[in-house]
Image 1 (cartoon, rainbow, N blue to C red):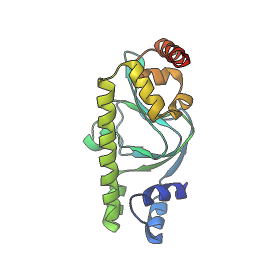
Image 2: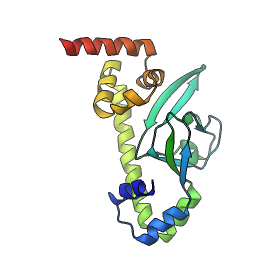
Image 3: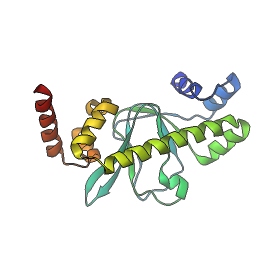
Image 4: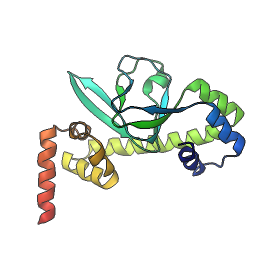
Length: 193
């Protein structure tokens, strides 16, 4: 998994052997079982996550019902709001598959940034990319119908259709599982004609 991470990083910055060893010395790699809750509502945390293999999701529980807000798969990271604002989390983060992730925290990052300033540049670039992606996703969600959201999901992230349980996918799209079934049937009929 180390090579997977190093290959990803090499798309942004080059690493020498000392820098690679510094990353390995941080002991950041974790194997997490499917269904593991990494963060609970009301919990404080300093950990950020980066998915090397698998899938994690963020969700709220509103009136006893899970409302999925995002899925993070290979080569995607998340820094929970509670890490930044130092308040208890308002949502949950859990694995939807057996996953291999890296974890980091602000203290670890400050130490590595001091030793190797190029890592701070890498994190800034990744943060900017994530912010832009999140804004596009939010705008797309707010301005589209459930059918348009589903078609966009098929186009941009077709792997989620197979990897994520239907009730979580429906929640992510802002509809009920029964509505998702009807929507899929309608799209299949359209495509046959």
